[in-house]
Length: 220
Image 1: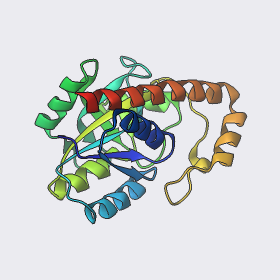
Image 2 (image 1 turned 120 degrees about the vertical axis):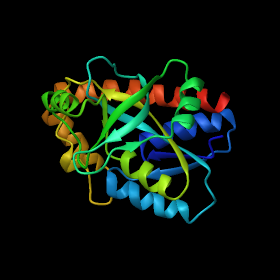
Image 3 (image 1 turned 180 degrees about the horizontal axis):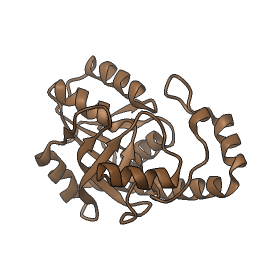
């Protein structure tokens, strides 16, 4: 059923492509930049290409609830925002994805943001304020724009940092085009070595879970 997979470029894209190559799966992969603007631009480019029927948005996400753990698969039910109307995910397609991933947590209420959330206390506060369990920057514009174009969309993300975990200050590592500056990222991690080591460890675990999730989906 899934014909197109949207994923942030970089390590997440590579994990998806490895899983698809291993399975010999023909799915189209659309790599987006990081952040809502870059994600919106990717939709425009994708819609100019082959026709899409069912698209899956995947990648990593931050956790806003201590009830969920790093490496867990979350299938979104809706996405809320401080500035935009709530977007409801297609329930039928989300159910199909969740059933294919028997271990996934479904019906997740996610928060769409315009900037990375690096403070553990802020993540916990956002979770309480919006009654949300996960946060990411790309899913909201992807779902909104794809659905508006008549594409059926579901979102399955992997938790990459726990609700109370502080992250390195990643703001300067993001460039204006939705890319990640590797030197700035390394510097940010060195400035906060404990948080940086935890991010690297959790990121490796989450990427492995993302690769396994894609393999499970295409084999279903």
